[in-house]
Length: 382
Ligand SMILES: Cc1ncc(COP(=O)(O)O)c(C=O)c1O
Image (tube, rainbow, N blue to C red; front, side, top):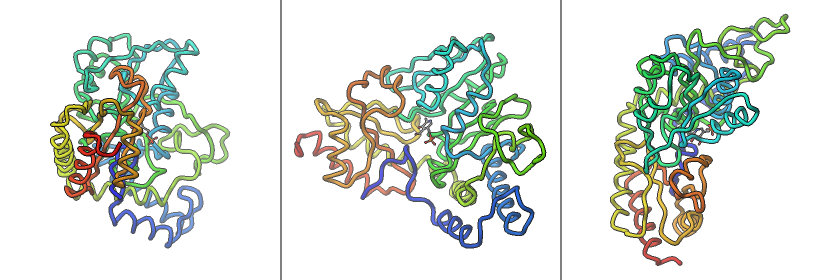
């Protein structure tokens, strides 16, 4: 099997991650922040250790401003429901995932907010000029992805952040497709709120992710409950991370996430990005002579690691099916949870095939995939 669906979730995981999770479960995984016994303290330390590693990785000065969540979707919903107020003007883009579009659209339909959507170019890129035109001093929040899950296009987040900061606009970034691949510095990029997955580019397990909220950004909790702190109070504590971190955490997953981010730091994020670019370039060069293939993704240097394409007169699901059944190549096809992106790119009817190599794929696997694609495009398997 050749796994090329890393934009959905990464696989395999570094051996140190697998080891750390297994060790943690074997040694005992008590509930952190609740009891005071030795095993609970060990869990506490593991969670804090991961918070510190992630803080260093994203240049977050206070690790306690990082809240662990099960995935990016929870983090984005917490942010959107927690910071947006009635009457707000919210700007987002046509390239967003449903985990931004659906909560925003619910608020809009209820008459609570007004939304403006920024259109992309033909590769799904949002320009800084269009951001500056749409985000004004009367905007409350700009919610946007750092990189598209449909085409892989990397967005001008640093410039957008500076524009937001200069105009008093809150800046919420979805790093689902960039964290662990494209460097993120919340200070330099003026990011107020960052939602991140643990299970994609950060190379941790499914069921991990989180939210960073800058100091002094007011946010209401989406979920309230046990935090292990202020137990006598009927009110959710307002200190971080407790305010947003109720209920039992995925401690083995978080322990593994710490090892995963350490693996990225030790490997060098630039080496990971370069490897992805090299594999993507091989794929793109391998199919560029097939005149019946349309590519929607930008060049590898401007791309977090996705080749999105269609073959003329074939449904994307048919291509995905052939890759899986005939060649054992795992990719995603159809619509990619970003309905407005498909409208902008004109692929609402048949979706796209999405190939997303990971750091652990090799050239041989890409070579086999290119040959399979050439064969499918030339009609050898219909
Ligand atoms: C851009 C983007 N945002 C959000 C999400 C949701 O991520 P999660 O599965 O971690 O909830 C995804 C998932 O693919 C994504 O690609």
